[in-house]
Length: 262
Length: 262
Image (cartoon, rainbow over all chains, first blue to last red; front, side, top):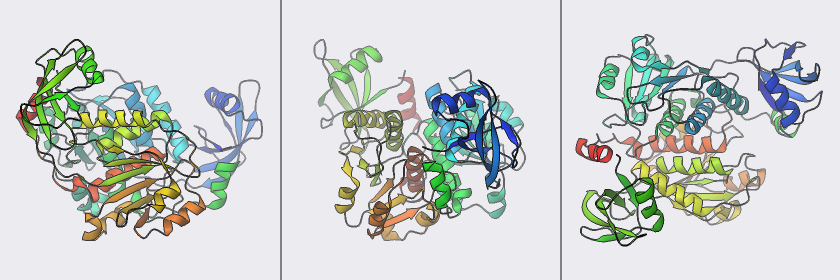
């Protein structure tokens, strides 16, 4: 039986009782069939990860009584994923994968060729939380309200590097660009921008060309779907610029056992 | 209206009539509502890509009359993706994405911890063909019959490099390993092996250690699902070793227009 790992809003500290929301209580009791005293892991994006135990507070509510800390909160790569919304099933998958791959923020962008007109932000946020719980992240990516392409560029933060995956071709290879970065660029905040299925239009490409921190790159000779391009670019970025550059710590046998056998 | 691009078995040459199968005829007539004379693009994995036109041969059958060649067949990276089968929806997605990312072959592997017991090869093949048609590949990845982990390793081809994504940690970073390869390794055939959700067991890890061409790598500090790890490793491999190392050709404006506006 695996240990349930939950994202909560509350501050986390030893001995504190963290409230669980109705959906979490339902999930623990009726999906996972956990009884009072069941062990949990909690994180809130600020205080690291803590052991806790489930405690009922009436028929439909419960709290988590917090024990000891299992992991300290640590800095994470500051990379946004800016993407034109796509159809629902693919968007669900994109949010899940981008969360696993360590995106710090998810920014839907309406470009001129974007076919999808609405984004269900609550659904995106729920997917991001679920993926963060499962991928053992200590944070949940910030899911931002959609903006137009023009507005995104007009308010682009000075110094934030923007990696644009340009499917019209002609871009230098992604590994060549990311391997050749200097120290300042490597330490800067970043974003990856993926266009809609129909591509950026000429005015959008021209506007991107006016941002000094833009780097256009190519992702090989095959035409990639927007969701594939997003995940591929994020994986390459983490491998060459982000936190995949460091050897992965060998998992603590005790910790691992407690995650999988409780 | 986009130009329909179809994978066929027949040899392709100017003036030849290529038979279309029943599913293709149904798709063209009833899903895409194409009439006789509608333009198509065909490829077969051997002869490049050709323009063709739809021609009825009775109520339920049709052929494609082949015109001129649009692209020559070219060599593609020789990289297999070996993966423990996962649940159906995720497997569909994995096959689609691995096809877009240029895997040459898809090899299901039953490891000791693999929870899924059956693989629908026909479904995998249909997904691979559909993805190849859409991603403008000139080939379809070979979908192999499942093998046990022990058999896979016992018959491992001499010289084929094996990149193992080891989620127990301790592996060097993927970019460090792939950037540091010598010319012989870069030119060799490759495979990427992803374990099941439960990880490889100790005997499997020991068996992998006895294969001389194995390289274990880490994919950062977050725990990735098996499908995410497969796609991330394949993207990094293409970027650092495969055909994403070359600048992408700028799409021919005529060709592009004909693909999207016919």
